[in-house]
Amino acid sequence: MPSEDRTPVTTRVPASQKAAWAADADALDMSQAEFVRTMVQAGRRELELPEGVGAATAAGAEGGECDGVEPDSPGPNPGGEALEDRVLDVLHEEGVCSWDELVEAFVGDFEDELDETLTRLQSEGPVSYSGREGGYVVRE
Image (cartoon, rainbow, N blue to C red; front, side, top):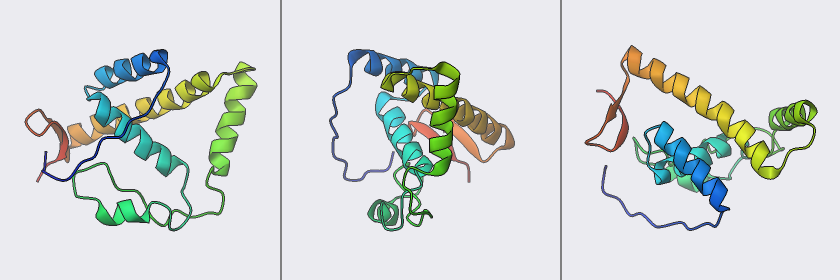
């Protein structure tokens, strides 16, 4: 992994949520830190952040890292209508959902999509998993 300044981030979540994240990270052969970084960045993209939000991290993103976001995501609605529609669909199907149940509904969809995408990219050749590098890399 390239050397760069890193800073720890601490958050508190219910023990059951941390256990679910740890299991999901293991299933994806990722560290817990890598899993959380990936999910946060995916959520930022899904939210279609308004112009200017996240621009600082996008400008400083290093190649090969999962730090960057699209700085010019369109739309004045940071939640996005697509996300609203998906929440409503889940609630219509399930009736009542806790916060954790809603999060799990969306994380599960993302994990499936991420797994399929990484499998395809690895089979097509542009991406491989490198134990030496500690994660997925783009092949030269």
